[in-house]
Image (cartoon, rainbow, N blue to C red):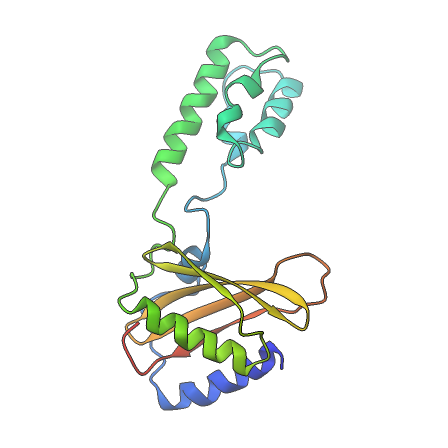
Length: 194
């Protein structure tokens, strides 16, 4: 069965349980983010430093890798003409931005109170919809549960967050591009407090 079945099942369940959620779709999107930080505004990191355009473009290209490998910096900014002062200022701006934009993974969603019950409910729902029973769950934070499961031979990854006392949001995507596995998301009402 596909995610469409999940959505149909959720629609039936939603008819029984009130659907009010205090979180907006934008906030739920932040809850699902696995990094805990927003994307680095790269052009702002090199603005107004008197850097020639070609050097600024090179610095920006190198900064795209900052969030993947911060240990490579500031050394990654050497070798194409930036002054030590410019490199120091870029790194200061990056540090200030990271400090101001880092949040707990899963925020602003509330923390789980009954994590094991939520995992059991999600597992039962996924098995019912054609996923193999052997699936892995991990605790990314107190506000987020991640999962890895297989359906129709394709590995799928998911994130579960609590959006109301008795309601969770489940998002599933294919683990690899062009794998043929489809994904989706749905709100799951619960009979217990998540």
